Length: 204
Image (cartoon, rainbow, N blue to C red; front, side):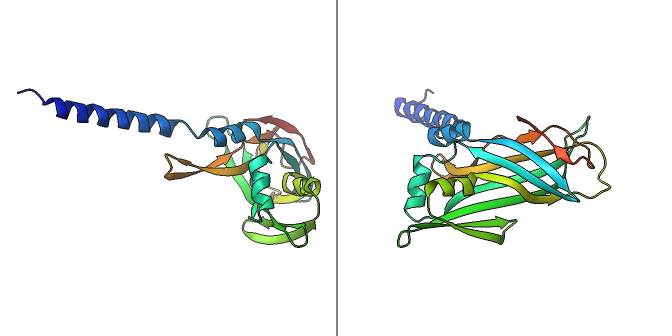
């Protein structure tokens, strides 16, 4: 007994919807993808002072027109940075030794025409700044010089790498599933735990 024509049409439409949905799920939204492709961590290096790594880096090409619009509207806006030290293992995945998360958020006060920038490390507020120009704000959100970031135990064995990435936005897949947009990881060249100067490398 054959399948009625109406039934065949419904099946075909259902299959088409499934395939289209899968294709859309596999392709991130263009805007989020474009921002992720442009933004990048650059100038990564570190200096060791005792057990503490003083980390320097900057985030390039992340403040686009939409981000500035959000800031000027008074919405809290900023970036989150993941900073990790990992031990290199030849025959297995690198192992995280220590990690921290830095969140930098700006809020615009339309009455005073000032931007307040708050800095949080692992959720704890540790510093605040007030700036008055977009140039100062961009530096506060994206440029870090010898930032005390992580501590290394003196007995940490093996060769290590320092790596950093930034969360630069959010997106939704199919209008329903939330997702975060990150830059690629940038990492230093391998270094020994006792090494004082740590040089930059390439993005993964």
